[in-house]
Image (cartoon, rainbow, N blue to C red; front, side, top):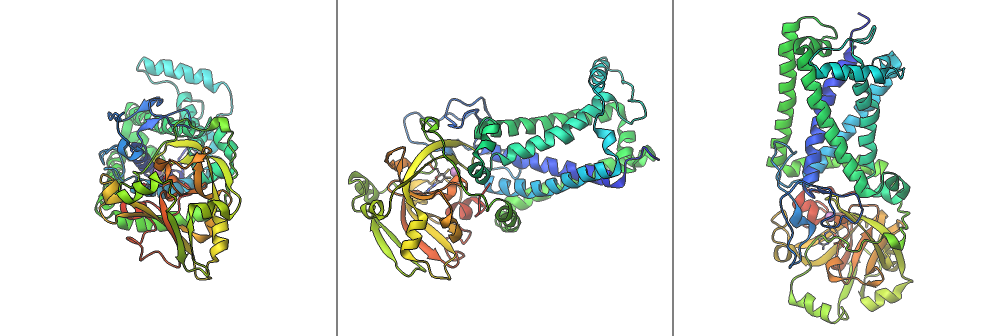
Length: 497
Ligand SMILES: Nc1nc2c(c(=O)[nH]1)N[C@H]1C(S)=C(S)[C@@H](COP(=O)(O)O)O[C@H]1N2
Ligand SMILES: [Mo]
Protein backbone atom coordinates (compact mmCIF):
# COMPACT_ATOMS: atom_id res chain seq x y z
CA UNK A 1 0.00 0.00 0.00
CA UNK A 2 3.00 2.25 0.50
CA UNK A 3 3.15 2.96 -3.21
CA UNK A 4 -0.48 4.03 -3.44
CA UNK A 5 -1.22 7.55 -4.57
CA UNK A 6 -2.94 9.33 -1.64
CA UNK A 7 -6.47 10.62 -2.09
CA UNK A 8 -5.52 14.30 -1.84
CA UNK A 9 -3.03 13.87 -4.65
CA UNK A 10 -5.56 12.16 -6.90
CA UNK A 11 -8.21 14.79 -6.26
CA UNK A 12 -5.75 17.62 -6.86
CA UNK A 13 -4.56 15.95 -10.04
CA UNK A 14 -8.02 16.07 -11.59
CA UNK A 15 -8.75 19.59 -10.31
CA UNK A 16 -5.47 20.62 -11.86
CA UNK A 17 -6.62 19.26 -15.22
CA UNK A 18 -9.74 21.40 -14.97
CA UNK A 19 -7.88 24.56 -13.93
CA UNK A 20 -5.04 24.27 -16.43
CA UNK A 21 -7.41 23.67 -19.33
CA UNK A 22 -9.50 26.69 -18.29
CA UNK A 23 -6.31 28.74 -18.06
CA UNK A 24 -5.21 27.62 -21.51
CA UNK A 25 -8.52 28.47 -23.17
CA UNK A 26 -8.95 31.85 -21.46
CA UNK A 27 -5.28 32.56 -22.19
CA UNK A 28 -5.90 31.99 -25.89
CA UNK A 29 -8.78 34.48 -25.70
CA UNK A 30 -6.42 37.08 -24.25
CA UNK A 31 -3.79 36.30 -26.86
CA UNK A 32 -6.36 36.72 -29.64
CA UNK A 33 -7.02 40.33 -28.75
CA UNK A 34 -3.51 41.18 -29.90
CA UNK A 35 -2.43 38.06 -31.77
CA UNK A 36 1.24 38.99 -32.11
CA UNK A 37 4.29 38.31 -29.99
CA UNK A 38 7.33 40.54 -29.69
CA UNK A 39 10.64 40.57 -27.85
CA UNK A 40 10.90 44.34 -27.56
CA UNK A 41 8.63 46.57 -25.50
CA UNK A 42 7.81 48.95 -28.36
CA UNK A 43 5.49 46.25 -29.82
CA UNK A 44 6.20 47.82 -33.14
CA UNK A 45 4.15 46.59 -36.07
CA UNK A 46 6.25 44.27 -38.21
CA UNK A 47 8.67 43.30 -35.44
CA UNK A 48 6.56 40.42 -34.12
CA UNK A 49 8.31 37.03 -34.01
CA UNK A 50 5.01 35.16 -34.09
CA UNK A 51 1.55 36.08 -35.31
CA UNK A 52 -1.75 34.26 -35.03
CA UNK A 53 -3.73 36.28 -37.53
CA UNK A 54 -3.86 36.80 -41.26
CA UNK A 55 -4.89 40.45 -41.03
CA UNK A 56 -2.56 43.08 -42.43
CA UNK A 57 -2.92 46.68 -41.35
CA UNK A 58 -3.56 49.50 -43.82
CA UNK A 59 -0.65 51.82 -44.51
CA UNK A 60 -2.75 54.75 -45.70
CA UNK A 61 -5.30 55.30 -42.94
CA UNK A 62 -5.33 55.58 -39.17
CA UNK A 63 -5.98 52.24 -37.54
CA UNK A 64 -5.69 51.35 -33.92
CA UNK A 65 -4.88 48.17 -32.08
CA UNK A 66 -8.55 47.20 -31.73
CA UNK A 67 -8.61 46.74 -35.49
CA UNK A 68 -5.97 44.03 -35.10
CA UNK A 69 -8.10 41.90 -32.77
CA UNK A 70 -9.01 38.36 -33.86
CA UNK A 71 -12.27 36.48 -33.44
CA UNK A 72 -11.39 32.96 -32.22
CA UNK A 73 -13.73 30.02 -31.99
CA UNK A 74 -15.05 29.04 -28.52
CA UNK A 75 -13.61 25.58 -29.18
CA UNK A 76 -10.10 26.87 -28.55
CA UNK A 77 -10.73 29.99 -26.53
CA UNK A 78 -12.86 30.87 -23.53
CA UNK A 79 -15.36 32.29 -24.28
CA UNK A 80 -14.36 33.07 -27.90
CA UNK A 81 -15.67 35.76 -30.25
CA UNK A 82 -13.59 38.76 -29.16
CA UNK A 83 -14.62 38.76 -25.53
CA UNK A 84 -11.30 39.56 -23.95
CA UNK A 85 -13.03 41.11 -20.92
CA UNK A 86 -14.69 37.79 -20.14
CA UNK A 87 -11.53 35.84 -21.00
CA UNK A 88 -9.66 37.93 -18.43
CA UNK A 89 -12.31 37.28 -15.75
CA UNK A 90 -11.93 33.52 -16.29
CA UNK A 91 -8.14 33.65 -16.45
CA UNK A 92 -7.80 35.54 -13.16
CA UNK A 93 -10.58 33.70 -11.38
CA UNK A 94 -9.10 30.35 -12.35
CA UNK A 95 -5.56 31.38 -11.57
CA UNK A 96 -6.50 32.13 -7.96
CA UNK A 97 -7.92 28.63 -7.62
CA UNK A 98 -4.92 27.14 -9.40
CA UNK A 99 -2.49 28.99 -7.12
CA UNK A 100 -4.25 27.82 -3.97
CA UNK A 101 -4.28 24.29 -5.36
CA UNK A 102 -0.58 24.53 -6.23
CA UNK A 103 0.39 25.85 -2.81
CA UNK A 104 -1.54 23.14 -0.99
CA UNK A 105 -0.11 20.53 -3.38
CA UNK A 106 3.49 21.49 -2.71
CA UNK A 107 2.90 21.71 1.05
CA UNK A 108 1.29 18.27 1.06
CA UNK A 109 4.03 16.82 -1.15
CA UNK A 110 6.64 17.81 1.41
CA UNK A 111 4.52 17.10 4.49
CA UNK A 112 3.75 13.54 3.40
CA UNK A 113 7.07 12.57 1.83
CA UNK A 114 5.36 12.22 -1.56
CA UNK A 115 7.89 14.69 -2.94
CA UNK A 116 10.33 11.77 -3.33
CA UNK A 117 8.12 10.52 -6.10
CA UNK A 118 8.54 13.72 -8.10
CA UNK A 119 11.72 15.50 -7.08
CA UNK A 120 14.91 13.85 -8.39
CA UNK A 121 17.61 13.38 -5.77
CA UNK A 122 20.49 12.30 -8.01
CA UNK A 123 22.08 13.59 -11.20
CA UNK A 124 21.98 10.03 -12.54
CA UNK A 125 18.42 10.69 -13.55
CA UNK A 126 19.58 12.68 -16.59
CA UNK A 127 21.50 9.87 -18.39
CA UNK A 128 18.76 7.45 -17.31
CA UNK A 129 16.09 9.71 -18.81
CA UNK A 130 18.08 9.88 -22.03
CA UNK A 131 18.15 6.08 -22.19
CA UNK A 132 14.41 6.02 -21.64
CA UNK A 133 13.92 8.44 -24.49
CA UNK A 134 15.95 6.25 -26.82
CA UNK A 135 13.92 3.24 -25.69
CA UNK A 136 10.60 5.01 -26.34
CA UNK A 137 11.94 5.98 -29.72
CA UNK A 138 12.14 2.26 -30.53
CA UNK A 139 8.54 1.89 -29.37
CA UNK A 140 9.59 -0.12 -26.34
CA UNK A 141 8.88 0.43 -22.67
CA UNK A 142 11.83 1.53 -20.52
CA UNK A 143 12.37 0.09 -17.01
CA UNK A 144 10.91 1.72 -13.91
CA UNK A 145 13.29 3.37 -11.50
CA UNK A 146 14.21 1.00 -8.66
CA UNK A 147 11.41 0.97 -6.10
CA UNK A 148 9.45 3.72 -7.86
CA UNK A 149 6.33 3.79 -9.99
CA UNK A 150 7.88 5.93 -12.74
CA UNK A 151 10.63 5.66 -15.29
CA UNK A 152 13.38 8.28 -15.15
CA UNK A 153 12.11 10.33 -18.08
CA UNK A 154 8.63 10.43 -16.60
CA UNK A 155 9.88 11.49 -13.19
CA UNK A 156 12.04 14.20 -14.71
CA UNK A 157 9.13 15.50 -16.80
CA UNK A 158 6.81 15.66 -13.80
CA UNK A 159 9.48 17.44 -11.77
CA UNK A 160 9.92 19.91 -14.61
CA UNK A 161 6.20 20.64 -14.84
CA UNK A 162 5.63 20.95 -11.09
CA UNK A 163 8.78 22.73 -9.98
CA UNK A 164 9.86 24.64 -13.09
CA UNK A 165 7.05 25.17 -15.59
CA UNK A 166 4.30 26.07 -13.11
CA UNK A 167 6.37 28.69 -11.21
CA UNK A 168 7.64 30.00 -14.55
CA UNK A 169 4.07 30.58 -15.75
CA UNK A 170 3.14 32.30 -12.50
CA UNK A 171 6.15 34.62 -12.62
CA UNK A 172 5.90 35.49 -16.31
CA UNK A 173 2.19 36.12 -15.78
CA UNK A 174 2.86 38.44 -12.86
CA UNK A 175 5.52 40.25 -14.89
CA UNK A 176 2.63 41.44 -17.08
CA UNK A 177 0.75 43.13 -14.23
CA UNK A 178 1.06 46.92 -14.64
CA UNK A 179 0.99 47.45 -10.86
CA UNK A 180 3.94 45.11 -10.28
CA UNK A 181 5.80 46.46 -13.30
CA UNK A 182 5.32 49.99 -12.00
CA UNK A 183 6.45 49.13 -8.47
CA UNK A 184 9.32 46.78 -9.39
CA UNK A 185 10.59 47.71 -12.85
CA UNK A 186 13.58 45.37 -12.31
CA UNK A 187 11.18 42.42 -12.15
CA UNK A 188 10.10 43.09 -15.73
CA UNK A 189 13.66 43.71 -16.88
CA UNK A 190 14.65 40.38 -15.35
CA UNK A 191 12.63 38.63 -18.06
CA UNK A 192 14.02 40.84 -20.79
CA UNK A 193 11.09 43.29 -20.69
CA UNK A 194 7.32 43.29 -20.78
CA UNK A 195 7.00 41.77 -24.25
CA UNK A 196 9.63 39.12 -23.53
CA UNK A 197 7.60 38.17 -20.44
CA UNK A 198 4.47 37.92 -22.58
CA UNK A 199 6.29 35.84 -25.20
CA UNK A 200 7.74 33.53 -22.54
CA UNK A 201 4.29 33.19 -20.94
CA UNK A 202 2.99 32.05 -24.32
CA UNK A 203 5.86 29.55 -24.70
CA UNK A 204 4.91 28.25 -21.25
CA UNK A 205 1.34 27.77 -22.47
CA UNK A 206 2.74 25.85 -25.43
CA UNK A 207 4.80 23.71 -23.04
CA UNK A 208 1.65 22.87 -21.07
CA UNK A 209 -0.15 21.88 -24.26
CA UNK A 210 2.79 19.74 -25.40
CA UNK A 211 3.05 18.13 -21.96
CA UNK A 212 -0.67 17.37 -21.91
CA UNK A 213 -0.55 15.78 -25.35
CA UNK A 214 2.55 13.74 -24.44
CA UNK A 215 1.04 12.73 -21.11
CA UNK A 216 -2.14 11.45 -22.76
CA UNK A 217 -0.11 9.61 -25.37
CA UNK A 218 2.06 7.92 -22.76
CA UNK A 219 -0.90 6.87 -20.66
CA UNK A 220 -2.43 5.25 -23.70
CA UNK A 221 0.89 3.62 -24.54
CA UNK A 222 1.44 2.21 -21.04
CA UNK A 223 -2.15 1.15 -20.53
CA UNK A 224 -4.99 3.59 -20.04
CA UNK A 225 -7.10 1.55 -17.56
CA UNK A 226 -4.18 0.68 -15.27
CA UNK A 227 -2.74 4.20 -15.07
CA UNK A 228 -6.15 5.75 -14.61
CA UNK A 229 -6.78 3.29 -11.79
CA UNK A 230 -3.67 4.71 -10.10
CA UNK A 231 -5.08 8.24 -10.33
CA UNK A 232 -8.63 7.23 -9.40
CA UNK A 233 -8.28 4.46 -6.79
CA UNK A 234 -4.63 5.03 -5.86
CA UNK A 235 -3.53 1.56 -7.01
CA UNK A 236 -3.96 -0.68 -10.03
CA UNK A 237 -7.28 -2.38 -9.28
CA UNK A 238 -10.78 -2.54 -10.75
CA UNK A 239 -9.39 -1.77 -14.18
CA UNK A 240 -12.67 -1.91 -16.07
CA UNK A 241 -14.32 0.43 -13.61
CA UNK A 242 -11.27 2.70 -13.74
CA UNK A 243 -11.57 2.84 -17.51
CA UNK A 244 -15.19 3.96 -17.43
CA UNK A 245 -14.62 6.31 -14.53
CA UNK A 246 -11.74 7.99 -16.37
CA UNK A 247 -14.06 8.69 -19.28
CA UNK A 248 -16.70 10.00 -16.88
CA UNK A 249 -14.20 12.37 -15.24
CA UNK A 250 -13.05 13.68 -18.60
CA UNK A 251 -16.67 14.12 -19.67
CA UNK A 252 -17.34 16.08 -16.48
CA UNK A 253 -14.38 18.37 -17.18
CA UNK A 254 -15.61 18.94 -20.73
CA UNK A 255 -19.08 19.63 -19.35
CA UNK A 256 -17.69 22.34 -17.07
CA UNK A 257 -15.97 23.93 -20.07
CA UNK A 258 -19.15 23.84 -22.11
CA UNK A 259 -21.19 25.26 -19.25
CA UNK A 260 -18.89 28.20 -18.53
CA UNK A 261 -18.57 28.94 -22.24
CA UNK A 262 -22.31 28.97 -22.79
CA UNK A 263 -22.85 31.06 -19.65
CA UNK A 264 -20.17 33.51 -20.81
CA UNK A 265 -21.57 33.91 -24.30
CA UNK A 266 -25.21 34.13 -23.19
CA UNK A 267 -24.87 36.32 -20.10
CA UNK A 268 -21.49 38.03 -20.15
CA UNK A 269 -22.81 40.69 -17.77
CA UNK A 270 -23.49 38.19 -15.02
CA UNK A 271 -20.04 36.61 -15.48
CA UNK A 272 -18.55 40.10 -15.31
CA UNK A 273 -20.43 40.93 -12.11
CA UNK A 274 -19.77 37.68 -10.27
CA UNK A 275 -16.20 36.87 -11.21
CA UNK A 276 -15.35 40.57 -11.33
CA UNK A 277 -16.46 41.05 -7.72
CA UNK A 278 -14.22 38.21 -6.57
CA UNK A 279 -11.23 39.17 -8.73
CA UNK A 280 -11.60 42.81 -7.71
CA UNK A 281 -11.21 41.97 -4.03
CA UNK A 282 -8.09 39.89 -4.72
CA UNK A 283 -6.56 42.62 -6.89
CA UNK A 284 -7.27 45.40 -4.41
CA UNK A 285 -5.79 43.32 -1.64
CA UNK A 286 -2.63 42.14 -3.36
CA UNK A 287 -1.85 44.70 -6.06
CA UNK A 288 -3.47 47.97 -4.99
CA UNK A 289 -0.65 48.71 -2.50
CA UNK A 290 1.85 48.99 -5.39
CA UNK A 291 2.96 52.53 -6.18
CA UNK A 292 4.61 53.42 -9.44
CA UNK A 293 8.35 54.03 -9.27
CA UNK A 294 9.19 54.05 -12.94
CA UNK A 295 11.92 56.07 -14.50
CA UNK A 296 12.82 54.65 -17.88
CA UNK A 297 15.79 56.22 -19.64
CA UNK A 298 14.96 58.52 -22.54
CA UNK A 299 16.72 56.02 -24.81
CA UNK A 300 13.96 53.49 -24.01
CA UNK A 301 11.18 55.69 -25.48
CA UNK A 302 9.31 53.92 -28.27
CA UNK A 303 9.86 55.48 -31.69
CA UNK A 304 6.18 54.87 -32.47
CA UNK A 305 3.98 54.65 -29.40
CA UNK A 306 1.07 52.35 -30.20
CA UNK A 307 -2.44 53.82 -30.32
CA UNK A 308 -5.81 52.63 -29.07
CA UNK A 309 -9.07 54.47 -29.70
CA UNK A 310 -10.23 56.72 -32.52
CA UNK A 311 -10.05 60.50 -31.96
CA UNK A 312 -13.21 62.62 -31.86
CA UNK A 313 -14.39 63.02 -35.44
CA UNK A 314 -16.52 66.17 -35.30
CA UNK A 315 -16.03 69.74 -36.45
CA UNK A 316 -16.13 71.21 -32.95
CA UNK A 317 -13.10 69.12 -31.97
CA UNK A 318 -11.26 69.70 -35.24
CA UNK A 319 -11.70 73.44 -34.98
CA UNK A 320 -10.38 73.37 -31.41
CA UNK A 321 -7.40 71.37 -32.63
CA UNK A 322 -6.65 73.91 -35.36
CA UNK A 323 -6.46 76.59 -32.66
CA UNK A 324 -4.21 74.45 -30.47
CA UNK A 325 -7.10 73.96 -28.06
CA UNK A 326 -6.96 77.61 -26.96
CA UNK A 327 -10.72 77.66 -26.39
CA UNK A 328 -11.04 74.15 -24.97
CA UNK A 329 -12.20 74.10 -21.36
CA UNK A 330 -12.11 71.46 -18.67
CA UNK A 331 -15.05 71.41 -16.29
CA UNK A 332 -14.31 69.93 -12.89
CA UNK A 333 -17.23 69.46 -10.53
CA UNK A 334 -19.58 67.12 -8.77
CA UNK A 335 -19.07 66.43 -5.08
CA UNK A 336 -16.45 69.14 -4.49
CA UNK A 337 -16.27 72.34 -2.48
CA UNK A 338 -14.75 74.35 -5.26
CA UNK A 339 -15.87 73.46 -8.79
CA UNK A 340 -13.65 75.00 -11.47
CA UNK A 341 -13.46 75.47 -15.21
CA UNK A 342 -9.91 75.54 -16.53
CA UNK A 343 -8.32 76.31 -19.87
CA UNK A 344 -5.18 74.56 -21.03
CA UNK A 345 -3.20 77.67 -20.06
CA UNK A 346 -4.74 77.55 -16.56
CA UNK A 347 -3.77 73.91 -16.18
CA UNK A 348 -0.22 74.58 -17.35
CA UNK A 349 0.05 77.51 -14.92
CA UNK A 350 -1.53 75.70 -11.96
CA UNK A 351 1.54 74.02 -10.48
CA UNK A 352 4.87 72.86 -11.76
CA UNK A 353 4.77 70.34 -14.58
CA UNK A 354 5.63 66.78 -13.64
CA UNK A 355 7.15 64.35 -16.13
CA UNK A 356 7.50 60.59 -16.09
CA UNK A 357 9.06 58.14 -18.51
CA UNK A 358 7.02 54.97 -18.20
CA UNK A 359 5.84 51.72 -19.71
CA UNK A 360 2.29 51.71 -21.07
CA UNK A 361 0.37 48.42 -20.87
CA UNK A 362 -2.67 47.93 -23.01
CA UNK A 363 -5.17 45.34 -21.80
CA UNK A 364 -4.65 43.70 -25.17
CA UNK A 365 -1.05 42.86 -24.34
CA UNK A 366 0.98 45.37 -26.33
CA UNK A 367 3.19 47.94 -24.66
CA UNK A 368 5.14 51.09 -25.48
CA UNK A 369 7.37 53.45 -23.55
CA UNK A 370 6.65 57.17 -23.47
CA UNK A 371 7.51 60.26 -21.51
CA UNK A 372 4.48 62.15 -20.28
CA UNK A 373 4.28 65.65 -18.84
CA UNK A 374 1.37 67.25 -17.04
CA UNK A 375 -0.43 68.15 -13.85
CA UNK A 376 -0.45 65.60 -11.02
CA UNK A 377 -4.09 64.64 -10.46
CA UNK A 378 -3.49 65.15 -6.73
CA UNK A 379 -2.94 68.87 -7.35
CA UNK A 380 -6.28 69.19 -9.10
CA UNK A 381 -7.98 67.25 -6.30
CA UNK A 382 -6.47 69.60 -3.74
CA UNK A 383 -7.69 72.58 -5.74
CA UNK A 384 -11.33 71.45 -5.93
CA UNK A 385 -11.43 69.83 -2.45
CA UNK A 386 -13.72 66.75 -2.73
CA UNK A 387 -16.54 66.44 -0.20
CA UNK A 388 -16.33 63.54 2.26
CA UNK A 389 -18.94 61.56 0.34
CA UNK A 390 -16.93 61.63 -2.93
CA UNK A 391 -15.49 58.18 -3.60
CA UNK A 392 -14.80 58.05 -7.33
CA UNK A 393 -13.57 60.29 -10.10
CA UNK A 394 -15.28 60.06 -13.47
CA UNK A 395 -13.43 61.24 -16.58
CA UNK A 396 -15.72 62.16 -19.47
CA UNK A 397 -14.29 62.56 -22.95
CA UNK A 398 -15.10 64.18 -26.26
CA UNK A 399 -15.09 60.81 -27.95
CA UNK A 400 -18.50 59.67 -29.14
CA UNK A 401 -18.00 55.99 -29.78
CA UNK A 402 -20.93 55.37 -32.08
CA UNK A 403 -19.61 58.12 -34.30
CA UNK A 404 -15.85 57.70 -33.88
CA UNK A 405 -15.42 53.98 -33.46
CA UNK A 406 -18.47 52.18 -34.86
CA UNK A 407 -16.52 48.90 -35.08
CA UNK A 408 -15.74 48.87 -31.34
CA UNK A 409 -17.32 46.12 -29.25
CA UNK A 410 -20.69 46.80 -27.70
CA UNK A 411 -23.63 48.76 -28.91
CA UNK A 412 -24.85 51.22 -26.35
CA UNK A 413 -23.52 54.36 -24.77
CA UNK A 414 -21.77 56.83 -27.03
CA UNK A 415 -19.56 58.92 -24.81
CA UNK A 416 -16.30 57.31 -23.72
CA UNK A 417 -15.78 57.69 -19.98
CA UNK A 418 -13.82 55.94 -17.25
CA UNK A 419 -14.19 55.87 -13.46
CA UNK A 420 -11.37 55.45 -10.95
CA UNK A 421 -11.31 55.18 -7.15
CA UNK A 422 -10.62 58.57 -5.56
CA UNK A 423 -7.70 57.11 -3.57
CA UNK A 424 -5.75 56.54 -6.79
CA UNK A 425 -5.54 60.30 -7.32
CA UNK A 426 -3.07 60.46 -4.44
CA UNK A 427 -0.77 57.84 -5.94
CA UNK A 428 2.57 58.87 -7.42
CA UNK A 429 2.79 59.18 -11.22
CA UNK A 430 -0.93 59.82 -11.73
CA UNK A 431 -1.04 62.63 -14.21
CA UNK A 432 -3.35 64.73 -16.33
CA UNK A 433 -0.95 64.77 -19.24
CA UNK A 434 -0.80 67.56 -21.81
CA UNK A 435 2.64 66.65 -23.14
CA UNK A 436 4.15 63.54 -24.66
CA UNK A 437 7.85 63.05 -25.33
CA UNK A 438 8.48 66.76 -24.79
CA UNK A 439 5.85 67.92 -27.33
CA UNK A 440 2.23 69.01 -26.89
CA UNK A 441 0.08 65.88 -26.61
CA UNK A 442 -0.69 64.61 -30.16
CA UNK A 443 -4.32 64.14 -31.18
CA UNK A 444 -4.07 60.38 -31.49
CA UNK A 445 -2.70 60.17 -27.93
CA UNK A 446 -5.51 62.26 -26.41
CA UNK A 447 -5.01 66.00 -27.04
CA UNK A 448 -5.47 68.26 -25.26
CA UNK A 449 -5.62 66.26 -22.01
CA UNK A 450 -5.45 62.57 -21.05
CA UNK A 451 -5.06 60.57 -17.90
CA UNK A 452 -1.90 58.66 -17.01
CA UNK A 453 -2.37 56.07 -14.29
CA UNK A 454 0.77 54.00 -14.25
CA UNK A 455 -0.30 51.15 -11.98
CA UNK A 456 -3.26 50.25 -14.18
CA UNK A 457 -3.99 48.85 -17.61
CA UNK A 458 -4.24 51.34 -20.50
CA UNK A 459 -7.99 51.56 -21.05
CA UNK A 460 -8.42 53.43 -17.75
CA UNK A 461 -6.36 56.32 -19.10
CA UNK A 462 -9.12 58.32 -20.77
CA UNK A 463 -7.97 60.48 -23.68
CA UNK A 464 -9.60 63.66 -25.06
CA UNK A 465 -10.95 64.59 -21.60
CA UNK A 466 -13.47 67.45 -21.30
CA UNK A 467 -15.05 66.93 -17.90
CA UNK A 468 -14.09 65.50 -14.53
CA UNK A 469 -16.80 64.64 -11.98
CA UNK A 470 -16.38 63.58 -8.38
CA UNK A 471 -19.13 61.11 -7.49
CA UNK A 472 -20.27 58.88 -4.64
CA UNK A 473 -21.55 56.14 -6.88
CA UNK A 474 -21.16 55.25 -10.56
CA UNK A 475 -24.06 52.85 -10.98
CA UNK A 476 -26.12 55.56 -12.76
CA UNK A 477 -23.36 56.54 -15.19
CA UNK A 478 -23.52 54.79 -18.56
CA UNK A 479 -24.54 51.19 -17.92
CA UNK A 480 -23.14 51.45 -14.42
CA UNK A 481 -20.09 49.22 -14.66
CA UNK A 482 -17.44 51.91 -14.12
CA UNK A 483 -16.45 52.91 -17.64
CA UNK A 484 -17.22 52.62 -21.32
CA UNK A 485 -15.02 49.55 -21.75
CA UNK A 486 -16.55 47.98 -18.64
CA UNK A 487 -20.04 48.67 -19.99
CA UNK A 488 -19.41 47.51 -23.53
CA UNK A 489 -16.59 44.99 -23.40
CA UNK A 490 -17.16 43.56 -19.89
CA UNK A 491 -13.77 44.69 -18.62
CA UNK A 492 -13.00 44.78 -14.91
CA UNK A 493 -13.12 48.20 -13.24
CA UNK A 494 -9.91 47.84 -11.23
CA UNK A 495 -7.12 46.76 -13.47
CA UNK A 496 -3.84 46.39 -11.60
CA UNK A 497 -3.35 43.35 -13.85
N1 LIG B 1 -11.30 58.41 -24.97
C1 LIG B 1 -10.61 57.27 -25.07
N2 LIG B 1 -9.56 57.07 -24.26
C2 LIG B 1 -8.84 55.94 -24.34
C3 LIG B 1 -9.19 54.92 -25.26
C4 LIG B 1 -10.32 55.13 -26.09
O1 LIG B 1 -10.69 54.30 -26.91
N3 LIG B 1 -10.98 56.33 -25.97
N4 LIG B 1 -8.47 53.76 -25.31
C5 LIG B 1 -7.76 53.40 -24.08
C6 LIG B 1 -6.86 52.29 -24.26
S1 LIG B 1 -7.55 50.76 -24.38
C7 LIG B 1 -5.50 52.43 -24.23
S2 LIG B 1 -4.46 51.10 -24.32
C8 LIG B 1 -4.89 53.77 -24.19
C9 LIG B 1 -3.95 53.93 -25.35
O2 LIG B 1 -3.26 55.11 -25.24
P1 LIG B 1 -2.35 55.56 -26.46
O3 LIG B 1 -3.21 55.51 -27.68
O4 LIG B 1 -1.86 56.91 -26.13
O5 LIG B 1 -1.24 54.55 -26.55
O6 LIG B 1 -5.84 54.80 -24.22
C10 LIG B 1 -7.00 54.58 -23.49
N5 LIG B 1 -7.79 55.76 -23.52
MO1 LIG C 1 -5.91 49.22 -24.26
